[in-house]
Image (cartoon, rainbow, N blue to C red; front, side):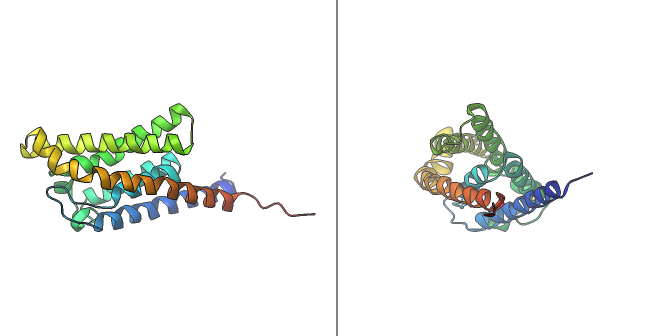
Length: 190
């Protein structure tokens, strides 16, 4: 039988995952076309989710986002959805959300550190894997040369994405601290 506190914890996790899918969707809709790959706020949101939520919650949110978008809901940039978006030229970036997030989470677990320095390293790991997968997918799906794919899909975003990471890590720290402080039992003075 499930205890009341575990039911509350499960409900809280489901709410966090649902809100995270909504955040990922809104961050995808904030789009500025920059060639084959648009500028979105998704890097900020994914790094935020990786660090603010439990690992299972952040991976569940990313997986739900990809599945819901894959079945056709207009969750991706440009309000696109469906398998065509997942298999199209920018599909590598979408798939990298989950793969790169999982690797960053494994890094944090293996090191056992949750200091801000290790969280920046995890965010950098996420970004490098995301770039590599997106670059490779764009190159192979369009026949672009490695240089052209890099110039179109990675180079324009490096500085912008570093700024997003610099902002996402402390934002995640603040939210995680606020949520943790809020769920700690309050001790009443006798």
